Amino acid sequence: MPTTDNENYYFYFSTIDIEKIDPSPYQLRKYFDEEKLRELGASILQDGLIEPVIVRPHKKDRFQLIAGERRLRAIKDYTDFSVIQAKIAEVDDHKARRIGAAENILREDLSAIETIEATIKIIDVEIGEIDKTLTVGKTPLERVHKLLSKLDSIWVSRDRGSRVSKEADDLFYKFIEQVELIFKNLPKPLKWRSFLLNDLNLLTDIAPNVQRISVKHGLNKAQTKAIARLEQVSKVDFNKVAQKGTILVQGRQNNLLPDPKLNEISAREIRIFTERLEKENKIKEQQKEEGQREFPIEIKAAVMTRLGIPNVRIAKRLNIHRQTISNYTRKTNDRFFKKIDQAFKSRVSVHDIAKTYSVPQALVWSQVLKEKTDQERFKALNWGLRTWDQWNFNDVDKRFGDPWPGRIPAQLVAHALFYFTKQNDLVFDPMAGGAVVADTCLAFNRRCWSFDLSDRLNARPEIEPFLWDPENLTWPIKTDKKPDLIFFDPPYFKKMADHYMKGSISDFSKPRYLNFFKELFFLIKENSKPSTHIAFLNADFRDFQGIPASDEDPENAILILEYAKLLEQSGWKITHLIDTPLSTERFTGNMVKRMQEKRTLGIIRRTLIIGKPVIYR
Ligand SMILES: C[S@@+](CC[C@H](N)C(=O)[O-])C[C@H]1O[C@@H](n2cnc3c(N)ncnc32)[C@H](O)[C@@H]1O
Image (cartoon, rainbow, N blue to C red):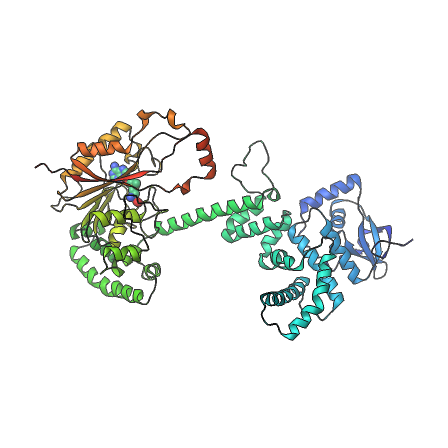
């Protein structure tokens, strides 16, 4: 006997043949997790169907599904039942769509995307009831989106006090109350603007593959937005996460527990994971770019010529004839430098000029700043000039030097050049690494001879391969020319031991490390002139990690004082001590907290020791 429920429609319960049920024409759901369907089938086999599906009479002797597609599929595919318990409702199209959508919304395990889709279906049905001509569009999403966007733009204009056409005003007044009412009467009431701005955009702005994953893993709104960002940052990592159904969250790994499911990982954790990935990818990309850095041979020759490297050495390094270098110089002038000047005059950025003509940025700077004073160069590079003996910079300037372990800020080098050299002076860099010193010298019109044990002929022909061998310390060039400044940035004691090549002093024992410097300082002094300055960069080494400051073993430490003493013992007079602190950004909040708990005193002070040869009168 048909009964009526609180929604005033007739229904009765019956057991019907599953083959007689036709699918719902309103089912938007595209994804069904087979694993979950299998589980549902097993549970129905064991405990029976707890909630009947809802159908309505359809054609002759057949039914149309209104709600319960998952249950029906589970029974069809994973049980041997041929009948199903059903609530048979006698409803029209409108009511059928509403019941189907409302059932969905009230399900607890529904993902944000499915909830929004179901909400849209109800709104679409209700709006259609108000006025069939009101909305245009092929799908409920298109229709609802168009109407709400229109109402919203009128709402915003009115709110701002802008003039609104009479037609728009009429439309607004005609429908706003009804739309508000529809949203108020939803199974889970909402505000229409908040739905438009915070929910609906999940369907309009997020890629379909992300939506699918969000549904599959039952993600909420914030998680879906976070995972969409991940997909934008890295398709590869998004696919991996989608496939594994989890994310390796830092601090959450626990061998005893299974990995958390994707919907158990908070949006914040997904965002942190994405941000880390973004940073790593940027570095990798940059490294790839730098690793592949190779310029035409005439550009390599131009860089080396501008750095004042003698022609014999350029010829040897590039394996060309000396005469060829002068031919190149003529050619590069017309082919590159004139064009660089023109492009710069037309306000093309240095970065773009470097890319267009395939020349290093530092060489472009050297050209475009040609006639400038040092102060003008600081300004053009957007660097503030420090007047006092504390030079702190938040970060390295990526325009200068390569991503190299221990890379220093070019601003630091520029300040040393500013205070202790003049334009066209000769700078000597015995351990050049990523060539920040050479690049800065180009930008500041200083000559520069660089050496390092790693040989990167293609990327950095201007750095000559040379090993400062403690067993046999020799000067790399036979020449009368003496440098005006030696900018010496060695590997700090015990740091970066794994990063540099074999032969690096970074893994020397303490006595060997100190003795190496003593002898090298002496050799440098022998190859200097009275006006030469040495700028030696280093930091205190204290074995502080995980140890309270008062328990540190001073025998293990090398303070900056010791280098100063060695310099003095090797014939140098210290003239300046400049603080060039490391940025604290590399310490995370957790690290700082742990250090404070242990009373560990970290090191960020780095010192540039400036010295001059002692002149005995
Ligand atoms: C701190 S890095 C220089 C970084 C550089 N100033 C920059 O900003 O890119 C020190 C360099 O010293 C080099 N080095 C270490 N021991 C050396 C040795 N015995 N002879 C030559 N170079 C050495 C390493 O290869 C490394 O590139």
